[in-house]
Amino acid sequence: MPCGRLLRHLSLATVTVAAGHASSASTRAGSVYANPDQFEPYELTALQDILEGEERLAIRYELLQRLRRLIAHRSVPHLDQWLEDAEASDIRALVNLSHRIQADRVAVENGLTLP
Image (cartoon, rainbow, N blue to C red):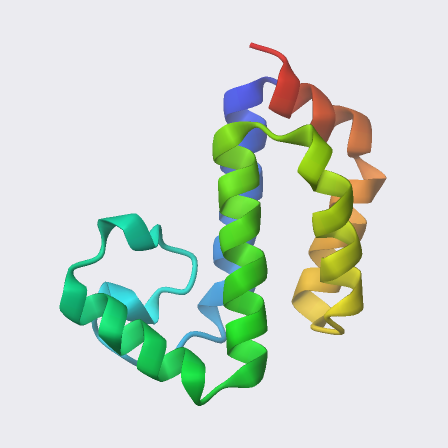
């Protein structure tokens, strides 16, 4: 699987995992899968307020941000820890995503390492 296609697939999977669980906030801060480096200060504050009141959403957000960074930096060494943490989260969507990544591990690693 070409790297770009794999990264899009994994990125879309993180969007799918997050989309049904994000707050109804109308700003990007409600998008738990978005890159917080692109947020305005008021959006970061809104995001922090949302996450403080929702423990499972905060866990999901942290794991999705780690996956986003892992994909962006093409960091295979961090993949195993992410998979373990996703399994341990007991959040069904993240556990399922972890299983799908593990089932296609060779393609995922190739997508992260090959040009």
